[in-house]
Image (tube, rainbow, N blue to C red; front, side, top):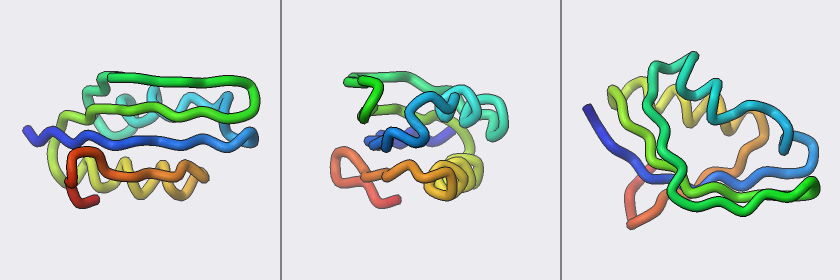
Length: 78
C-alpha cells in the first residue's frame, strides 16, 4: 500500500459532485480528509489517499478529468 497526500481545489461547477466518494469506490482507495474549506462557490480539501500506486494514479487522472485541480502536498510528485 502506498500513501499520497494531495490538495484538491474545486470550482463552483463541480463542488457538489461526490469526488472523494468516487475515488474510494471506483479506484479502491482509502481516503482520509485532513483539512477542508468548502462553500457553495469554491472549495479545497487536503486528502490522504491509501492504496495501490496504479489505483492512486488512475484516481488522480480521473479527478483531473472531472475538473478538479490537484497539487501534491509535502513535495510528493503526482
